[in-house]
Image 1 (cartoon, rainbow, N blue to C red):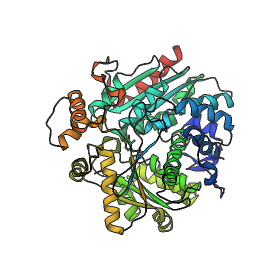
Image 2 (cartoon, helix red, strand yellow):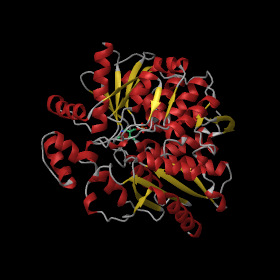
Image 3 (cartoon, rainbow, N blue to C red):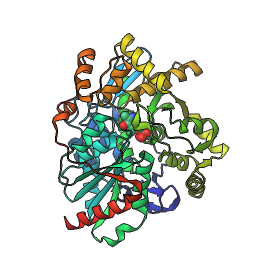
Amino acid sequence: MRYVSSRNDSIEVDSAKALIQGLSQDGGLFTPLLDNEKIDLSSLTDLSYPELATKIISFFFTDFKEKEILECAKKAYDSKFEDEDIIKLSYARDFSLLELYHGPTSAFKDFALSILPHLLKKAYRKCDCHDKLCILTATSGDTGKAALSAFADVKDTYITVFYPEIGVSDIQKQQMITSKGKNVKVIAVKGNFDDCQKLVKKATTSGIIDKYKNIRFTSANSINIGRLVPQIVYYYAAYLRLVKDKKIAMGDKIDFVVPTGNFGDILAGYLAKQSGLPVRRLVCASNSNNVLTDFFKTGKYDRKRNFINTISPSMDILVSSNLERLLYLVCKDSSMVKKYMNDLDKNGEYTVDEKIMKTINKTFKAYWCSEDECKKIIKTYFQDESLLVDPHTAVAICAFEKYRKETKDQKPCVILSTASPYKFAKEVLDTLGYEINESFAALNLLEEISEVPIPKNLKDLDKAKVRFKETISIKNGMKVIEERLKEIENA
Ligand SMILES: *Cc1c(COP(=O)(O)O)cnc(C)c1O
């Protein structure tokens, strides 16, 4: 399968190259050219998670041998995940909950980042590449730690994470600034996620790397297809589990609700559908940063609005990068996508052609959830259903309720649960009516009242040594990256 830049589809690479490069040089995102070939569902039953991952990833990464992918998948999906089956699907009254937060850093980002270093290593070998790899990562809270943990002390790889100084939860921050590994660096930015993401994109396309003959950039953000493709796997895994549990019959269509920020996770759902999974609708759930909800309703993407810091910080994003890939997949016209992205850059908005919107709206529905609604969901589901969810998952449940109410629909629905409530222990407790100022005491109190055990990686986090205290202004971002490159050159 070939990958093209969404802004110029004469730039065409195989998956190994796309993995290594991350972002295309013209600023476009590498997007798979899907033909009409589909994955045969019946060939996927009774596979272990690493075997299933191998089948799905091999469909997209055709320049890898199945054996190579299997090696990667076995290393990635092992006892680092709490559940033997890797994914955990639980059933609530009206929906099933795909709990994706039982990995090494307690967020769904672990699914892609656990395998990314292994895939990159194989890709390197294929391209006969020996350069040092400088991974620049912008995070809204969860990608950072998942990437730091996955790439710690990986040979010839240097990772730098930029996180917004204000916005991430105390626990998310502590997870990042106590990261181990000689090759890692964590920097707070006086700005929001969009500023961090912009800095990374700017550095990658600026040409500053040309001075460094033996170093290349890549990304661990969902702008890298190495993030997206492994995320397709759990859509299949959830579906197959529903079949196995006799909740649906093979071939039945189902809906997914996805709490969305950078539009990566939900785009993986779209790629699952395009590759043959019987998905009817994908419901895009947003918090008060509801730029996507407006987009799906009107066809106009308008980032010119106030950035709101919410209790679901990993979705506090106004520029959802992966929407660009959806636009290309639907219109197959890279000059049109380029025009939209130029409009966004220059005017802070773009309006998509009606025909394209019509196709998009056949699959996508979108709802957003206010802070009060989010808190109400956390509280009522805990009190009435003994279901403890984090704020991101609560946003998704809220969107699900609005969707059901509006459409009166009853199709089986899977809601993606993306983070452990413990990453937001203080916020969750506050919502439940407990006043507690100290985040680490909050972990213990939450365990006491919920009887859900604290994830291993978050226990004793308060005792871990803080290694990274640097805060920079956005203005100095490029300078800091240059310094990092010098450091890597001399390492
Ligand atoms: C990253 C993240 C999201 C949003 O995922 P995208 O791929 O950016 O849309 C939702 N919830 C949590 C907990 C996250 O960490």
